[in-house]
Image (cartoon, rainbow, N blue to C red; front, side, top):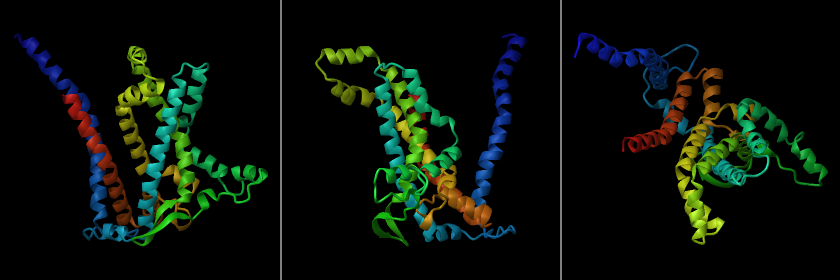
Length: 311
């Protein structure tokens, strides 16, 4: 091999690394470095405006898991995640199946359902805060229609059923359902787009062969199409779960913590603890717990995906 060829070979090997190096350094500092700093601060006594990095171990974490507000946050996040993911997937799948029927004006309907994704969660929160306001929103229409017992929406403090758990009542907070409505409105277009692209990728020959064998449309969807879309369902669930666990802006603008913390979530608690209460160690402890919850969902998915790609 000539000297020129060796130099070209060396440059081709080194050039990608040189181009990636600034990004690697930036990510190392501003992502993983700050994660490490957050974890370090969560183990300190820095709970005032004056920095105090005295090591206190897991004291801040133990405090949180005995705290009424944080236990309420875990309960609210659990039920918000279940309803948000479940309803978004059902509505998104239903819309995708309907649009996949080659209906007239498909582009119009597709854009209508995807449009909410173009809005920020802050805008969504403000709009739905007005729509579901017990005295100014859809309740005015219900009142005109003669409904006597008007829903209280996000100001309802009812928990169903009330089961004693720690220092809180465990059950479905009715107020969180109002937030679920707003979140589903925002994200059901996303799930529709995911399922629609998957439906369009399934060969028509497969469905025609099933019809020739005597399968009904319901059987084709139940035994062929839905199983083939399982990877899309898994990916959609992971993405929605990730959004759900770190949600902040929608709830902060729509309801805030709510009476009795019935609509509070860890993101809102972390923000108020850190930047309003100056309890930095407790705030960073909440952030670390949120990161762990998200990692429990994301990391297994990434590992599984990497193994499949390697195979």
